[in-house]
Length: 275
Image (tube, rainbow, N blue to C red; front, side, top):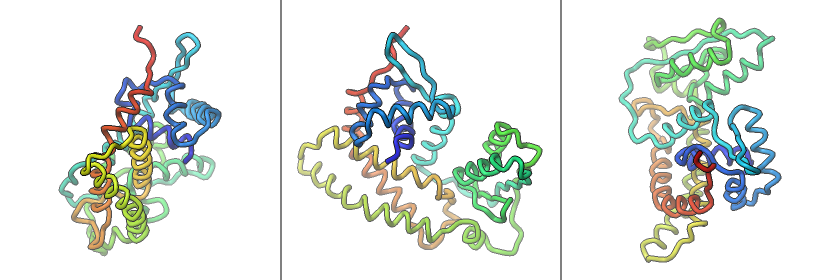
């Protein structure tokens, strides 16, 4: 596990619910449960600070780190998708983004593509991406942030032909690959969930440290689907779609692990003293 990616998970799953700030010593204690060294953790924190994801301040000789406003928006978006309970009824409209960004600004062009993919857009053509979800405001915000509004156009529209909606989905997203990733997740975590559920049913003790490690790994692994799953409304899901089974497994296993995981986090957690 990469330290920087794990830090996003720790902040998104725990720290943002506890004043959004944590002592670096607490971070090294928590991430040490995954075999990460203090040196690697400090290097990742420094890198995330330079990238604008984290902010810091000192109290005495102690350093405390919080998620920046930019980071908070990203974590909130991720949480809204991971823990989404119901899928809205699709109104039949598509959000379409078309861009023509010059070669000299290709770094921003590549960054926009990454942002679109993360939000769940699929590539219809090289420079035209679509989503069945209304993400126009988020796209506007991103293009304004990157100062590329003159190169981007955003539409909401109905599709008139010629593919039917599910065929359009197959053109823009690799459904087989996404299903394969979900199957791998299910195959890995179904036995773990069933084993833990059996222990709980028997009243066996499960260490809080175990719950913390396993829950964090679970969220860390499931979070990766944000980069490949377009969050399709039910009307557009293929006949074979393992996303719903994987989500049910995630929620069930999460519920078993969460109480112990939170207790363990709270023992290690320390924020800056109140002024």
